[in-house]
Length: 156
Image 1: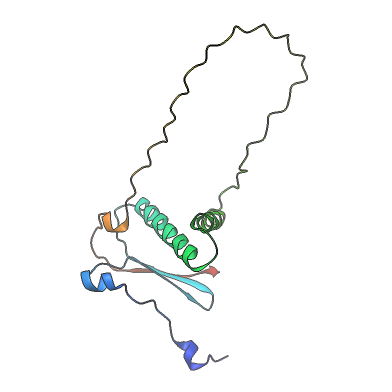
Image 2 (image 1 turned 90 degrees about the vertical axis):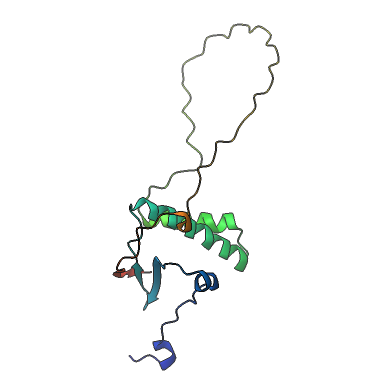
């Protein structure tokens, strides 16, 4: 089956104005061709773990885009993306609430009288420090290398 002439074109995204003005290195490109995902990537980092950081930053930016363009909040969009990402990678689904322990059928001994407790000052609760995020712009790249391309990856 032949496609109409306008469908034979590949509709690439424009390059960001900041990249055109300041230069940079494209590290990732993804496109759909006949419902198949094609990815071209540059071996830009010393370790694969850095790609995890880059993908996390991309995920946050995608959630922001959905929040601007739909009725979803950024948190809702992020939760949907995270759930689908984890499921696609084969993660085990974990219930949000842990199961309650079964009650024992043993009869409890009578409780001893408790001495009156002196009211204690409430303890201050401190949120754990969030680790610093590294973005692609702040991550040391290993320099330009020949781009690699993966072929079709299943139907999406």
